[in-house]
Length: 127
Image (tube, rainbow, N blue to C red):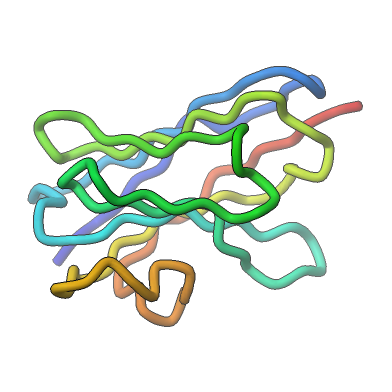
């Protein structure tokens, strides 16, 4: 069983930065692909970013490319989402998720593929 705990959300001004963290409870993430998703009020949950622990594979949603960066620590227990140049439309609840890694880094934007989810952390960006 993997338990995910997000932190780091809060209020930021447009153009500012925040860093979200997602910590594993009870084990490392080494056998999982990790993703970040977000859900704004009245909207569907959408893909933000994903990574594989090899460090080679990363992917980003179109709306955050060039502004957000996903990374992990060397112990493979914490995943980060560095969010720069924040916009009011980035306001949402952000969720960390883990899916069992396959031989190919794919389907990372399909939330149905993720087995474990954190509780979410609110990010609010003011204009």
